Image (tube, rainbow, N blue to C red; front, side):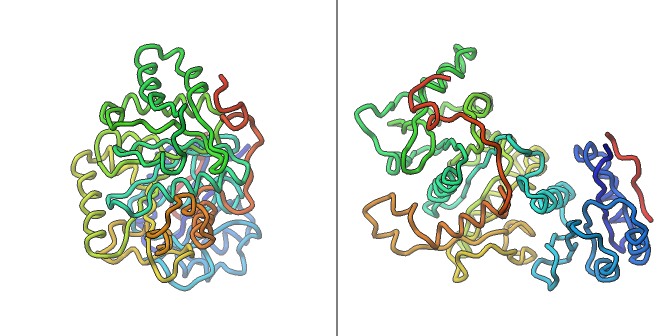
Length: 406
């Protein structure tokens, strides 16, 4: 079985050479063979001759020249200098860090193929999503639980993990007499003292909410568990949840802190949704937090930035998913502003927290986020068992052959 062929076409020879070399040496080399072009006529002739092409990433002039030679049902995207340029193809910023570029190209291809839009995720694998904001009170938990509820409503099994210092999930899930307020601390203790029993203990401690349709740990009464959490413990905990829960999605609701636990969550996740707003203070906080991560951890942080998607909260065009101009110096994520979430003023007066999961406008925005970045519309998942909802809330257990310019 041959590797898939990715066509990369741009007029700048040095750009094409560097992009091709990076893709050849990256983990994508096991799946992709890259053929590169710096001349539009050469690309057109290649396509007309019927040579392999499974995905095409090219500058607009190349796509226009090769329009009548484009193979049917072969996805393509346009390499542009700034997003929102006119054109019928999905747009990707040409000049951005190569890990981000490859991540976006793979995501567009996967979305067109009707599987998870996340590179490295195939049918039956668990998707790990992190939700973060450097701005308090912006709706991070609201987004996380709306995503969980909608994914669960589509028949997927979901686990919600709250890692906030001041965990507010009890507002949504409630606290009964059997609240299990020590469940999370017991889970962390087992990971350290009896790791071989952690899977069985997890299956017995997880709760299931019938309205959110999501599994979770009961809210702890104090922040000591979050303060005691280490990167190693978080990694082990996520491994247990993903290997013993039978989940399609795990959502990690992060605290506003940017500590070593935050870095571990970023390393472990497939995608991080970063919520922000466009007021000066909100932008400053996001830019400061991003700069801090880069300075503190260097390459250990920046190589995972391709996973980040900045979601703008509170825009007049609420409810639409679109590319926002990421070239402005005011945007903390150049080229990575990928969604708009509405601000719902009525939520400020609501006395019932579950109303935050019932707004049609907000739910529509969340639906588009999931379809754009996690499970494209029309994609499917396998019907595997698992999760506390299924088992009961308290029950137990080829390297490329060719690469270069043409």
